[in-house]
Length: 380
Image 1 (cartoon, rainbow, N blue to C red):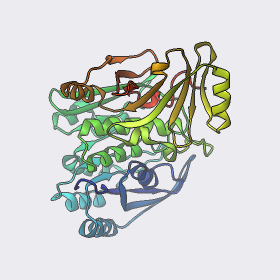
Image 2 (image 1 turned 135 degrees about the vertical axis):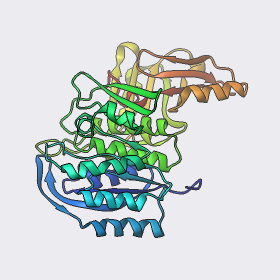
Image 3 (image 1 turned 180 degrees about the vertical axis):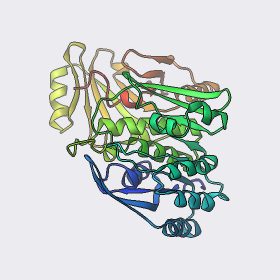
């Protein structure tokens, strides 16, 4: 992909009539992350939040024809493979992608969130060919066991992101294994929600989109994990069972790889009067702390704004820029001669912050907060 162009992401997966997972979740993910989604549909399902009622497999040749049509004209920067349908289609897809150089993320879908089986034994056996082609395979724990277990897959040098959502406990632990001695672990508090349909599809597609946009693998995974968590936070609560996530509500927090202007704090002398003024403008109040003279409000596009009662007028306005790579960013600025009043440090409210003054004396805060920017523990 050349700089300034839109990443072209090909999704090879099944359709979910309920819109929570599969092709529908994938398209929403690619779109929200700024890419162009293309599809090769492998199966049509009749399903909702309660389960899968029927599955119709798309003929293998039609799947391959969809792939060929996209590759030959529009081109592809990355591929996500989800529900594959059957063994014949798995082998045919492997044949069609074997001479391509774009990154491939393989999510070995076998069982739906509702428990419906979406891959038989022959299809699972054929997954090995796709795993050998994949830049990364992203099994959850039941899928990992069906594929032979962690030790067996690592022994065969398959690059893996092992998703820990099915494990017990209050934390979600995901493990990246690329090569012997090359691994990384992420741990986050579990978000308790019944709107978890499509989490695996969304994660894999978000990673593929990042790679298609030129991101390195670890930053692409970090952004994808944040995207999933924010979509879980913003789930609309639809259906009677495992509902869809809120892809459409994820804002710039997760989409921008570099510095993002998304928060401003202004000082005030009269907390109540300032709060009345800004709420009258129509900004919803999300943090209200009269005892500390602090309130945070949120605009419809996810940008936040706060007031802080204080006497030091010289720094009454603070401008906040977020970066997923805060420490590297600060190191580069220091190398250019900029002096920081505060180097990056972890704060009690869940952000990692650094601070410096601009030439006019305005306070500038560079930080990394992730979901804690819009969803701090003290949010109303």
